[in-house]
Image 1 (tube, rainbow, N blue to C red):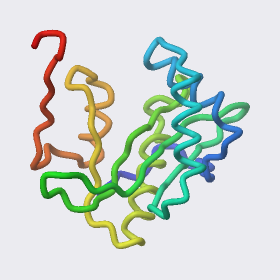
Image 2 (image 1 turned 180 degrees about the vertical axis):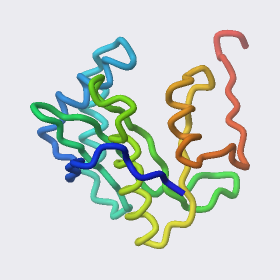
Image 3 (image 1 turned 90 degrees about the vertical axis):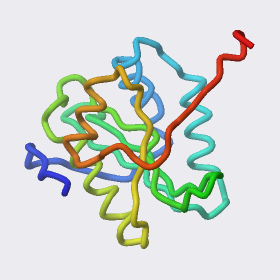
Length: 156
């Protein structure tokens, strides 16, 4: 069960193309890299794709800037994975860390996916990203039935 957010005046809205620079700014605070071209492509794919897939793009407004965002969609992959919801981006601005903003975004995303008939939600997190792992675990996420594997092609 998703816990109730700590902040009571959380204002969620649909993420909009105009939020691009704020999303890139918040991401840069977490990653240490300003990836404007990456986020431009993500926003283009997210907002311009006519394929009809279920997508959730949410923004939490802060006092003077974006407090946080979440992007997710329903995806189906190979190897027998059924269609399910995927969270592929979630972050908050520094003043809103550990205030319930991200949990509020996640709770609304869960509600929307459930309403659309989605029964499972997944994400992928770096195993050494303890704050993000802790966030998802505190919101009920556990290890799933798949193991992500990779091969460094420089080594082969």
